[in-house]
Amino acid sequence: MTSVDEPARPNGRIRDAARTQAEILDVATQEFARAGYDGARVDEIAARTRTTKRMIYYYFGGKDQLFTAVLERAYGVIREAEQKLDVEHLDPVAAIRRLAELTLDHHEQHPDFIRLVSIENIHGAEHIAASERLAKIGSPALEVIRRILASGQESGLFTADVDAVDLHAMISSFCFFRVANRHTFGALFGRDLVDPARREHYRAMLGDMVIAYLTADRTTD
Amino acid sequence: MTSVDEPARPNGRIRDAARTQAEILDVATQEFARAGYDGARVDEIAARTRTTKRMIYYYFGGKDQLFTAVLERAYGVIREAEQKLDVEHLDPVAAIRRLAELTLDHHEQHPDFIRLVSIENIHGAEHIAASERLAKIGSPALEVIRRILASGQESGLFTADVDAVDLHAMISSFCFFRVANRHTFGALFGRDLVDPARREHYRAMLGDMVIAYLTADRTTD
DNA sequence: ACGCTAATGTACGAACTAGTACGTTACCTA
DNA sequence: TAGGTAACGTACTAGTTCGTACATTAGCGT
View 1 (cartoon, chains in turn brown, blue, orange, red):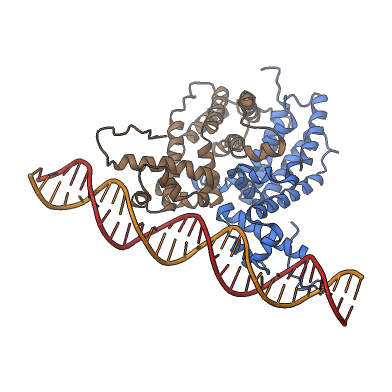
View 2 (cartoon, rainbow over the protein chains, first blue to last red):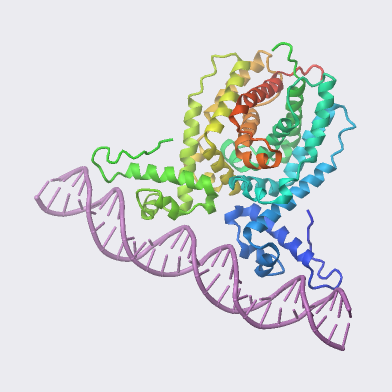
């Protein structure tokens, strides 16, 4: 997250387009994640910025485009993290387990991103559709999964007939649900899925689940 | 869903409190699911009802309480469906697989409910917290899982050290994600998770996953 | 040094939106 | 059948919210 934390005047400049834009994006990310698209207030975003509402319209055009820009940056952060994935030196089983664990950790560390994705889904992914950048963003993680999966299936270790996209969905489901539905799940079942005391438990559970699925003995079916 | 579909004058009555309330709830469910809490318009709900906005405030008090009532009814529908679950005559493996399949189907058939849950999570489950009915609604499905799990673990069939709440989370995760994140997932990965042509595939995938997890050979760990 | 433009601030408006005051009527009951 | 009350409708308001017209200035290039 390209955060902006108040160095008062880095190089003597008062006017700094890049800085102003980054600051608006920071605050907007928080505000949209806090209240949803329609719940978010442009005035509130402006108020929590050192600049004014005028600048939001000057740089981004409007609320819709601002939200799109927020999504673009948020997905960019995820993509960056995925590019740093380094699990392919492990054997396929360990690699997938590690990948699942990293996904779990990453989701937990970026609840705002999870909320933005939930919000974007409520709105039918219309902002993603309207964004050229997001349309072709791809997913480095998917490529990693593809390669590990091919390796594991070739060696006979992985018996499941599944492709990378579906395996990615399987792993993401659990990680996403845990963060996204934390509040309703907690209220209804009395269990906090993001309680730090249970993190290790869920990491193991997810890893066990995915590996069990991939390596299950299918001769008896 | 206690739907209201225009029998013009069932028993000659023009004024019918129960009917009016049900109609408001029907329309409100659609509107909230369509646009989120803040995106939903009280005027729009009223307009799509044969009654007026005045009645919404007369019966429900306000937008917040209306949303709470919508949630209460939506969760009530789910609970009803869960009470009709009939899988305990099956052996534990078949029972869990069937339960997972029914959960997948049910989520797919109630996308509005999924959206309402997403929306409620964006708002920190504050409406559930404010509802006495929802606070103690429980989950019949959880009881079913509890019993199957106990049976499977006792017989040694299930080797996983997991409780009913976590298993419920595991199953729900996949079913929920598939519907809730359909739009962003489709836009980013080009795969429609709710494509009818893939339904059987995902039913099998979920069943295989859960069963593999529960019955995995853990002696080699 | 100076002018030009990107960057910024102020003040305001038009449209919307949740909620309500006030008036009316159907229908049950005694 | 009369009267009371639950159910309903109309019209309005106060406050909010996105967006913009207009005015101003910092600082880079020459």
